[in-house]
Length: 143
Image 1: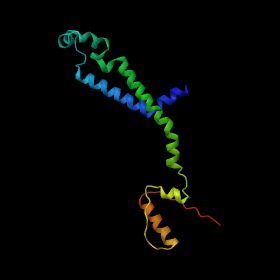
Image 2: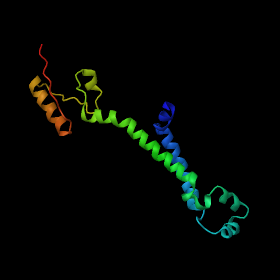
Image 3: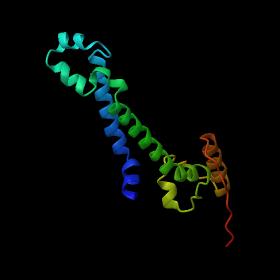
């Protein structure tokens, strides 16, 4: 059961399924759909029996194509559900960054290049981060 969950929570599986669905849809677009058997026999000859056997003549209603769509939908659903709680927590309960090394790896790192005092630097930093829509929480340490 766990291995099945791991398989269906894989983004790689989603990509593979998407490629297969796209490829088969291309075939279904190139081969006329829902025509009479005599039209397929006239157009494709012996290949018409093979197309009919694999339901390519009515591809979008075939059981195997619908199964592919179901597997893809299931894969996307499980991917979303397994990743959602962590992403939700990260978005709405962000951790407080206290260490200098954690600040230096942020995407918004920049040098102010000024010789301001601590209070002025703090105010400028708060203004800059707020202008970029960061939510700020100030914590004062008592030594």
